[in-house]
Length: 256
Image (cartoon, rainbow, N blue to C red; front, side, top):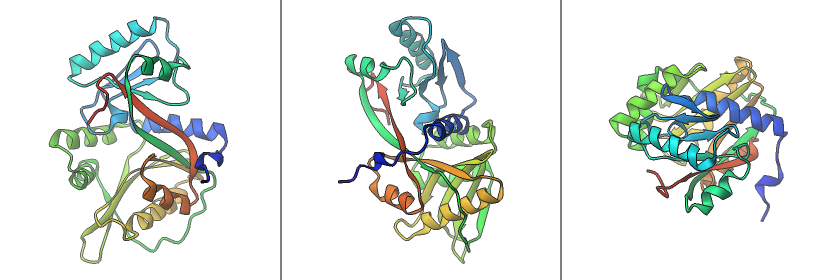
């Protein structure tokens, strides 16, 4: 079996995608605790309600985790750490595993090193943040609280939100997706199909990439579940290759 990780793009592009992804998923409810970025959104997306261990910090790990636990308890959220190749300290994953913290929800970040737009003969409907969050939430069965938090996050992120729906001739939604253009780099988010396995998601993604190219993007990234082989094959057809994997750890074992 061929290991998709053998086709690794340039490390600097992977790091750019990681940093761009942090901006794209930034909720209003975040703080810094000794070099760790903690996010406290009540939304469904784990990346907006987790710890990103960006720097080494100055206090012992147990003390730092205890301080973070207090913040999450106060917000009524379970504590979770997002572990990436850049997490600090460098042995953080092993140290959390030794505490019995379970690993879950692994995701692969895939990159497109050279964005060449293709003809995309589809019409996309632009949606404002509340309408887009409501649409994605309905497709995913999200709670009203999660939908409201999603809308708040994308409307107030430090990068410009752009969400779209792909509709049929009668106006029924076939798929929806969001893109974040950050200089010459575009990220695709929340790609969801109302009618799965009919090619609507791919048509939507190609249209988003063409639109992003017109806005100056020349490279692209996205995040996909490590166990989502169908989506990974779709993105590979479009030229995306594996860059790195991240996962979460929590004393709660796994979060819903």
